[in-house]
Image 1 (cartoon, rainbow, N blue to C red):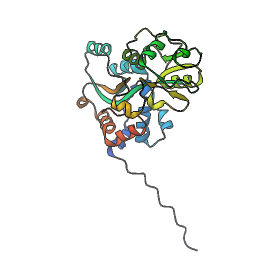
Image 2 (image 1 turned 45 degrees about the vertical axis):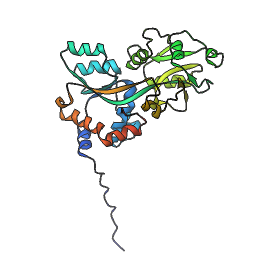
Image 3 (image 1 turned 45 degrees about the horizontal axis):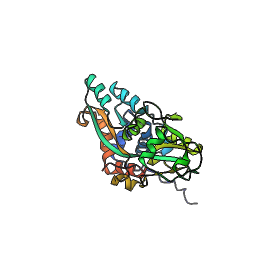
Image 4 (image 1 turned 90 degrees about the vertical axis):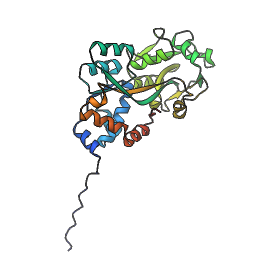
Length: 273
């Protein structure tokens, strides 16, 4: 009989030098909880894992927590909202320079329970809901149902940016404060009468995303600037990119390469223009 054919060995697919290097030496990354999906998606691409597997390796300790870790040398870089005046002051007092590079653009999308008949609100109505002036959906063309106002916890960079953009700092009347974007989404999905702010990339069919001032929250409208409530997210380091070690430079090079940008876009995240 013919000799048994041994199966040809499967060779691992070729990967770029950058990916090979990052697989061996991964930077210490921290950040805002709303950017956990961003790091998870990039990790998945680098390590050839599924998104869910990669996400298990991501730990972000909030905008403020990650900034503190960066200052204390416990993180090589962070994904964050743009550095605030207060954070800049802390860096100045610590005698360190900060560098920040825009990485994605995000919009505040207002999610309501899927059964809510309301499809659109104005910025003024959003302000009135969050500051407790409007408390029932019937005043907005909806059912006679109390509005359950959901938001992020005190100290969250997402909450800070939301209140700042709408100029309602320290005026919000939250029924419940949650510690992650995913937590807000899940609570809105499960709670009749609720409203919460989330990022576009997490919106799914468990909730309804509202138009704002007549403009739907789509990637096209956010990029064009016609959907108004948006902000950039940055990658921040201590010192300039040129001053970083090879590990951090390689990470930046990968994220800003065509391949890295394609990975970010494929996740439904919006690249800064």
